Length: 339
Image (cartoon, rainbow, N blue to C red; front, side, top):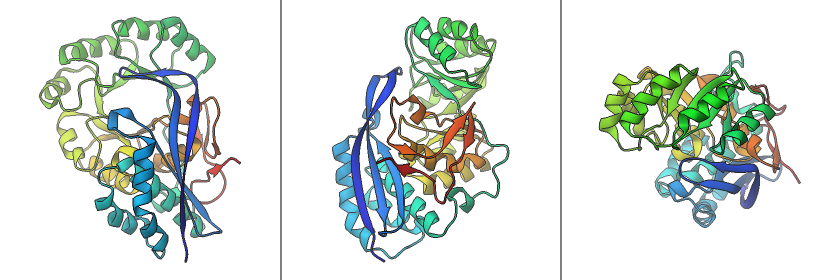
């Protein structure tokens, strides 16, 4: 069996400038990894991310560094391949994620199975994906909500008029709100805002404090009026146990942890500690999102709107209707690159 690994750089234009507490993005750079035996091809994705020091150059170099090993391997199980590659790509889990997802996708297609069938027997009771509203002027944010009626919104906060924003959005929709402050608050601010946000129909707050502020997070868990979900504080399997002490749940990102293989272990470990589990996305194409939603049967919450934020996509695959996941036909993730 002869494998061929290829990696292509794409630029994904966004519908609107996407602003969180740290930065604004207008065009998202991404790397698509393909693993093929000449007949069957699997796809994975990793995006550029300044917070984690990820550039296209770094991604390409990381993928290139293990290309020969992947092309010479003989159809191992994806978990075996991940453990073989992890020591070599420990410095770049984003690249490892793209490879792991591409190989899982290939492996499932080769075995004529959907990717999710390897860990789930059904598709009932799946969580609905949220739709993200980035930070902007209040009239712009409310207009985005009006233009995209949706059952669950993730609202990015971390500015002086946070509560004013949520009140304005609540005036135009009765949808469920979740809040993501992206590390922008201090503990006193988070405690106070949690009380007011609860009265505004918010379900939980994601990562309000700096990722390494463990002492304040202990206090926050005790005094918050809402559940607190870890994001930046929970990157890899090793973080799950520590987060269980100070959070009510975790948000797993495939690129942060290194792909589907470690994400499955993180979900299992979080359940041992009684944690709620969310899976989140980056602003990525339908390649990455189609891999991500394969884990939906195992989750409480899912943030899979990345491709919906794009002005144009580079792939087909999973779609969503009023938050409901509509899996594509076919094996693997069902995603295909558009020509």
